[in-house]
Length: 313
Image (cartoon, rainbow, N blue to C red; front, side):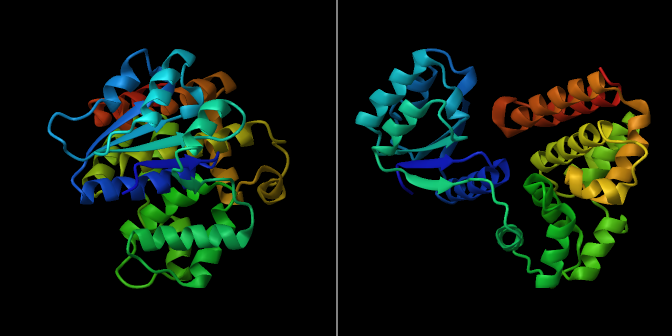
């Protein structure tokens, strides 16, 4: 592996995929992996994480949200760039833009492998993204199935990412076709991440916890569960501000949400206020960070978030 990687851009789904592939490479090389969340770094954290290993073992460090690294920690990182540890691979994750640009320019001078994660809007690019997601999971999908999935969820790459993971896990072996995609959307194929989300947003905490355990036991990544809940909350927020008299198919294009998602959100909104939605978004954002490495027990973090959201604080 290279000494430096720079995952650059604001599209979180592409960044997640890039990180997953790099993490797999770390694991293949039996690297010790650690993660730092730049906004939470205090003086000394960067230097400690980058200090040479006493055992000369291969190590990997992922620094997320680099654009938010505090000023008093930047010098530690710049000093390391001048004299990197040959046993260390550093992955920088930066959302792009002008924030933290000076540090970003310094990183670019050491010629990292740059993985672009800019938003994609063309249908063909979205379909290529979905195709690659299936291939990552060692599954193949027909062009028609990919087109159908993008047509239904293409306005949200995170939701596409979550759906691909669920379909790949739940669909029978062999090539995934349009019939399977249709079953997925009709709810006849178990979509464990969204089952957790539905029970949570419905306020049914016992069912949500049971669905969570079932999802984890069948191999669903905790990140996919937080992604599904976040996606459902975004749908709630979008639909909550829409004209209630308008039909779902009329709003679909305006909101970038499929008609069936609008119908479901309207049913769920009966028990939600804007303030409660905002609180839930904060809770799931915290849980997402925790399951990605900020907590020693990600399952407990998930259960805590589900409890808070289902009970609306």
